[in-house]
Length: 322
Length: 308
Image 1 (cartoon, each protein chain N blue to C red):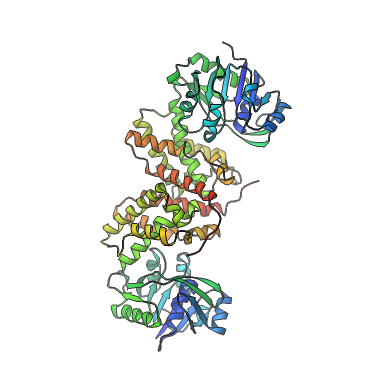
Image 2 (image 1 turned 45 degrees about the vertical axis):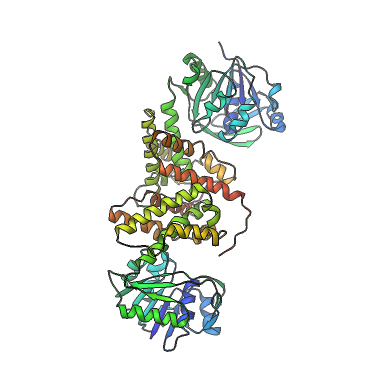
């Protein structure tokens, strides 16, 4: 079955990057939350940065107005996934659905709403929204995708999606079993996003420093080691070593003058005082550890501290010195 | 007897003003805040709140103006200990010197500059209202004992405890004062960085069961290190945590106040101290190590320039 119609659910930075690129090779519709966002996209979507393109997409905030699709990419944040997946119930009878959320558990949430064949994906690309109809494409790194085992998704279908992403100008790599990659990213994100959210530091070279006793590299490594132990207990052989990913990312991400470094999404969320994905990332890892009898006390500590930080935004700002 | 107060902020001022009440004690205060020093010399040092008195110590910003003193009390922020001691070392060349600072590690720094050292733990707290005037927020006892590697004589410890008590600050001399110091250390190391990293006041943090569990884990590591050193707490840090949740629910830990003002914190002397002693004793302290690194990382973020 050739994929001709694609529906992108959620038009944040990641959803918009998929929509803009895939519109070059397929008919793309976008489901937004806000009507004015849909209206802006209907007039054209601009991608700048690593790609320069204008895309024709149809967009709506009302799921009833969506036509049928061959592929649905659910690209909202993990924290918005349960509410978003509910809007898909009873639709897209012939479609495959791909999840790209950070952390673990997105496939299970989507599966509660319909029996579509699911494709698991993780993406390393990143961008910044410049407006409702303009996204800057910053890191042109790959999307990894694979069949979700529980729904018996044919691998040929995954290969077809990979081919479409590549044809649209994105990087992509299909793999028969995604879990080794998914877990590599999970462990990497749990360490890097959590430390970044708590220190207000972007992903700078300090994340790999292990010279002084109090250097952050020791903590990042210890968080990663915990994650690797949980993965091993789950029977997963990691695709990439998360510590090597960390070292490579700081070498690539920070310029020599140190004036640019990637701001992980969890730090963006903290700076904007939005709910973070920590429960899906550090929390998921800690819960898996608990379930498998491999404790992850440091990932648990990061999870608790970020949840505490989110709590602090909700309290009325009245401090009484004792 | 001449006593030099090194660092005359809120805590140093409490000690200076109370000691200045005692006959036969001449108090000198060394501090870098010129307006506070001038106010003390012109109008005296006023304490209000839990204590209420006016003392007349001599104050100076110039170490060379200090006369030779028999006793010293160091009350700077921990990160200024080394610099301050280098400055006052000539005046305290033959003195017995006592740290009343937070955490562990200050006595070692003081011992590099002077011959005889005492450790102390103090619970009174206050804040500077205006130059020359400190409001005392809480009362409470102070414990003093010799610092074992370079100990002050017990008669020096007892003399200072008696003088402070005479001046109105209840102080207890002990041959081994490590219990009080480590009780406060473990309490502070378990609660201060949690407040600093989350932005939550003490009670808001510790009434959440998930955070309380983290705090319990931090206390347990401190307890193990203290145990390996043969130190017995004089009260249980976990009980202090729960007590503070009731009586100091909305209190922002001093480390959170430092973070909000972007001042370097005392984490090196709190979690860093537990971590260092733990390493020496072969006791792992992963949670204290983690929070030490996170707070140091947060401090680092303030000096980092980001491109717009």
